[in-house]
Image (cartoon, rainbow, N blue to C red; front, side):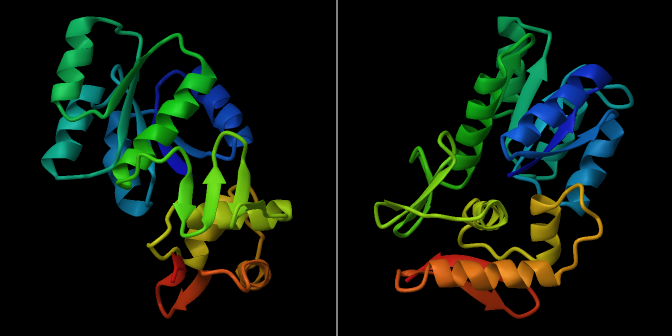
Length: 221
């Protein structure tokens, strides 16, 4: 899962990047509202965490701009302005959810997962593709009802694919999601991991297909 965080408090942003990263959520951070739309144009994010009190362009302006451009990205408002009027106005403006500061990290994670599930048209408590399911709470893959044994890197690649099941992910996108802090990792590493995952899924109706020019697609027959 990869999200964009638009937050102007450096201490809070640094903590969120680190804390969410430990839960397998990759976070890119911008501190100015004017940087949100260019960031979204360059990278395919799963969600946006948007603070209202941003410099340059405030959260309301950013929200209006994105929804005016028909951007379908799930947006979670994160702000210290905890009032009924504020909550109602941002939801009417196109926000998907609202979380007031201070907040618990576990609640933020749960809301993010729920937003992304709904955006993908599923109310199921797990990400799934056929008989393969991933529980974001336990961080466990199940295949045909049995726990799937994976190395940490295999787990990370398969998690990236199942969170986008039915949509291709390029090698570059997988590299950015799985190795965000390792710029020297060669694309060939992804090929090796995909080969290993195909072996793990062998004999099941779930497969990883290569789409020339687009990347890898997780699908079920």
